[in-house]
Image (cartoon, rainbow, N blue to C red; front, top):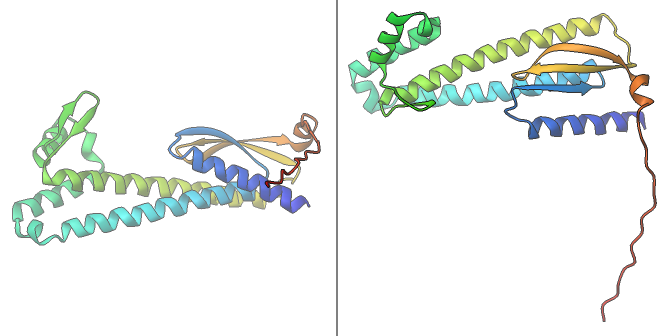
Length: 198
């Protein structure tokens, strides 16, 4: 019976993840370190699949016969990839000038617009780098949770977890009995009479 209660709680928390997808900061309560690890593993798998999709999308764009014929486009793409991988994109004014020569972006209120052929490649490169960083952070969090579990924390704890950008950053331990005392239960019978149609 205890296992089914934990399964219900896990399903409840997983539903929260689906509903809160895209939420940058949240605080969630977990009933075990294993549950937090499962949450991190789910996030990791989602980001890895997304990384694979974007990598394939970028690869197919770079292998496009019309694009590869244009040597200037190929040269700009290689330069763009180098700038984005080194992270020098926002290093200074010289880099900003170099970036504007690679792709044409126009500021419209709070967003940037581009119709340049390299615009798509640029956002794919940026998304891939961001996903790699996110995967790295999640891997580190996963390893930290595994180490934390080795210390043998008690099973009578609740783990109130601060999650920022999908990565657990802080965990507050709370005794389960404190929460059990505050629970409210309601039990009632409900019956409905079935009407027979003639």
